[in-house]
Length: 123
Picture (spheres, rainbow, N blue to C red):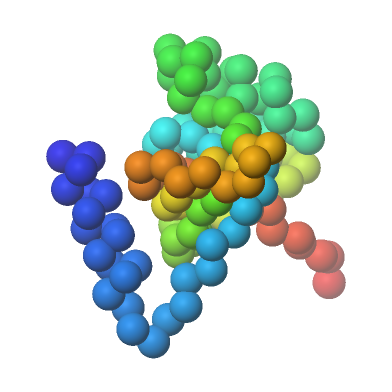
């Protein structure tokens, strides 16, 4: 099933002729599921490690969420989550590589989820 989803997402990205899909690189917080990353956003207090650890405990999976230095393509915003001090968009990412000391190394494409901080200003 995951292979079919990956193929569908890859074909969707490749099949859109008039849209450029920029590959971004950098260290990002990622989770296996949308629900996990939403929980990460709800708990986030500016300290990634304890927040990630808490979500992984709740998911009963020590590898559910983490921080990784990746090459990825962002998908469309799926929703918004808020903690006491932060607001985030929930976004799927198609991971296409891992950053190493020798440069970006390609990996088998995988869909994961991340948070993109939203800067809110009082009016």
